[in-house]
Image 1 (cartoon, helix red, strand yellow):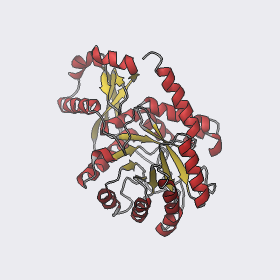
Image 2 (cartoon, helix red, strand yellow):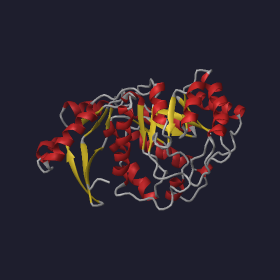
Image 3 (cartoon, rainbow, N blue to C red):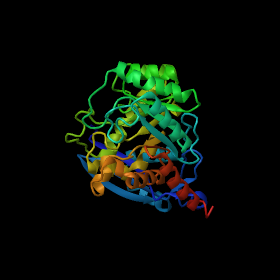
Length: 363
């Protein structure tokens, strides 16, 4: 772990015409995420040293003066980071992100935390995937192994038997399918069956062959952060500073993918809410979600029906967490997350549409 690190988090986002005006007047920096007009007039600079976090807020209007207070080494990092924020993000999997898109979840498992067993056969899973697509999902994420806390690992042969027929049934209907797996043989079988995205909770570290398969196939990949393994990941997870530690891990995995020949436009990142993280860790990561724009990749966010919602609310069961799931999705979208991974597609699409229409009134 690095003894001292500095991180840059865009704050106080502006959108639409307001954002463009603020940029033109030198009052905000642009944040290029797809075709959206985003800007931020404030950047938070966090210095993490010896597990202590010190932050300073710098506004665009006072940047030249305040920048003098930043150590010279970190000042060059800040200038480089601002240039990265302003650089137009590449597309991911053919999507340009003029607005956030929805990834619908299809769990072909008997033991997933929120819907285990509901779609545990090919016909039911395909039918559900089609319904999610019709409801507005741009991507259908198919998984054959639960990675909930305490989940039992599944052999690759079983996982393949679960997901391949479902992927084929959806892909042949022209649906963009991602495979949610941490196992290289499953990735290979899923790609052969028509999956065009790999979504790996281990960021391609769970299987020594995963990175080679993704690179050779030339398919987009979602790199997620998880501390530990599903069986034990919720047993006292520890971080120096969760947002920064997750950022460092994902930064290293992006670099590893690029070094292995994966195109930058084929890489997205997911901070992994709920995967080896306590409630305070999850809250901190959500608060600093816009930090991850500093990786220059598409941000995927998945908090749908997760237990932190119940912990922040009244202890609701997984199938009673829709309002909290919508709140989390909108919170992430407001920080520029481009892909929202959800169970409740129609409801999330409606919520996003209302926010977008209201934001467009002044444009």
